[in-house]
Length: 183
Image 1: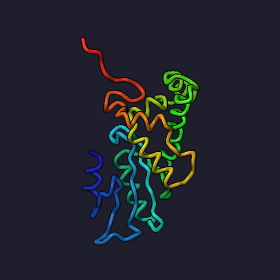
Image 2: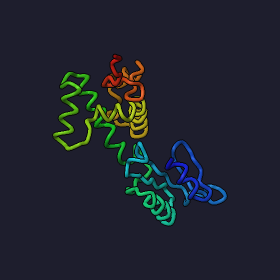
Image 3: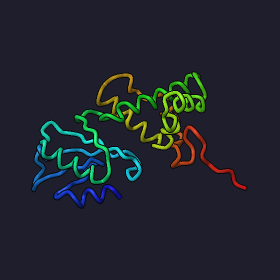
Image 4: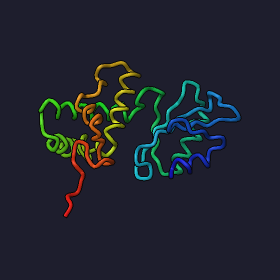
């Protein structure tokens, strides 16, 4: 697992809620940095490095080199809710839920439109099922709480699906039904 490989390579590394920080004897602000891996980490090539207010250039460079040795492409973000990828991706997924919720289009047409119209490998509703609807909802709540903008309020349909246990592929049903018919 990528997480364990990284922790073994960084002296004094500490895992805090899926955010890795390096420390020298005690956590020093210049040694604090976040690494946000995209799921699933063994397949996805991207990692976001999140600088704290006092993260040193040395800490950034050491962490960037480590991520590159793992074959990752590195992008850097300041420490804001959602970082880069989720701050852009989750509102798109949420808007896809709004389009479905308000009857703009079917789930299939929403996903096909985004796949063929924007060259995405999968549509936003399919991606939400892959990520997990509960995870998407949680991220939307973090974005809304952290940024305070109403555009991050989760779509009621997303909330309904999660409340009903429709979490996506991991549960066999989300926006799409993944249960295989029994013969």
